Length: 321
Image 1 (spheres, rainbow, N blue to C red):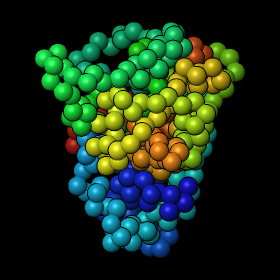
Image 2 (image 1 turned 90 degrees about the vertical axis):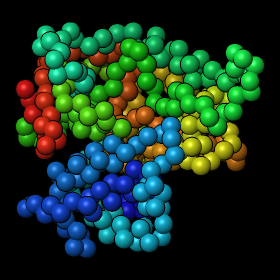
Image 3 (image 1 turned 180 degrees about the vertical axis):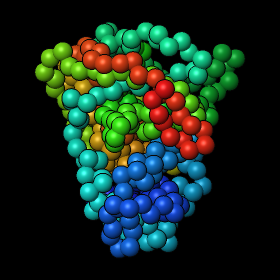
Image 4 (image 1 turned 180 degrees about the horizontal axis):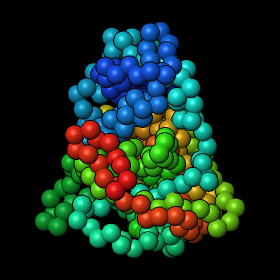
């Protein structure tokens, strides 16, 4: 990850903007060009960039403005500081297999003895994704009126989201905090959550996504065309591009891989962009939080927990309940 990579993506640009809005200058930070980056402020900026990610609607006006030459120039030093800071070294790291946590957001009044998450049936659920994502729009509705694809929204995500389904991420800091609590796209403002630590039941094959090229390569190797689906309208709204669209065929991916990990750097440089697959086709990475590993096979077990968490509405800080 370098500064130019960050500024090419809407989430990377928003990261730099949100950091610029912070007046914090904590001790022990890393400095480049007069900009200080520390672990806490970096994580907070990633979290805020995630919170404004919504891939079924036009981008927010600020995200449009941040593409201008004036804003890109203003954000250059911040992007350089992020790329150079030791506080962000882990953003390009592979999945931390010995420190994976599953987070479930719950109602504040949920019982403390919440049942363990379902970690089986994952592969069977993945096998149904091709049909789900390739389901085409009808040309007309039940009343015989022509359907305008620009007005339709549907399964806008391209991550392997299933039911049941599991994605996990590492913890950071002291005391350790699961990043799945804070790296949440379009957060609903939850104030309570439960987490479990999970471990592997066997050796696993993990596909690593660190760059936009990595994502495009997966789509080229395991293509699933989704042009005639509601994604056409959703991805046109969020990227302002119309044309052919494709995403990974997750059942095909699951033949070769047990899980797919998206690094923080991969998220910030890739998510929300219309990326060319070939001359006529593009793809969008959507619905995938930073550092999240989506599991495509039944290879996990609960290794610890549950732990209950509470978020203070004033400080936004999560603490163990």
